[in-house]
Length: 144
Ligand SMILES: [Zn+2]
Image (cartoon, rainbow, N blue to C red; front, side, top):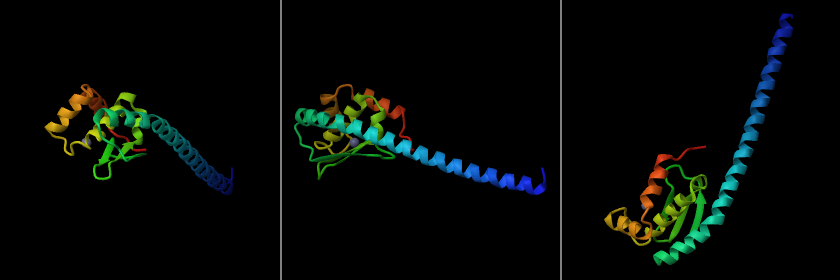
């Protein structure tokens, strides 16, 4: 092969590589997007039943709830707005773990801090809560 031919071939290979890279990237992005949508859909099917159940058990009302991807927390609760956010990552976990986070966030409507009173309330409403907490802690939040 001549020098020019070799160089051309090298350039061609590089173009093909770049194209493949872009193609894979786009395909992966699409696939991840679909997977996330599916997870979100799964959670949104399960959460209303859980919230209704625990509003009744705990005796409080949740005004608003949503699902979003969070980097450091499984759930959050805005006490003033009575709004709960649940981490999209919970879709990958056991149903019991999702339920634990729902209970945890709803209990915050009775007790803001994670002190003795909070623990006592969790013990009362969900005696096995520590099992689910440990299970969630064993699998730290991953980023995509
Ligand atoms: Zn909390």
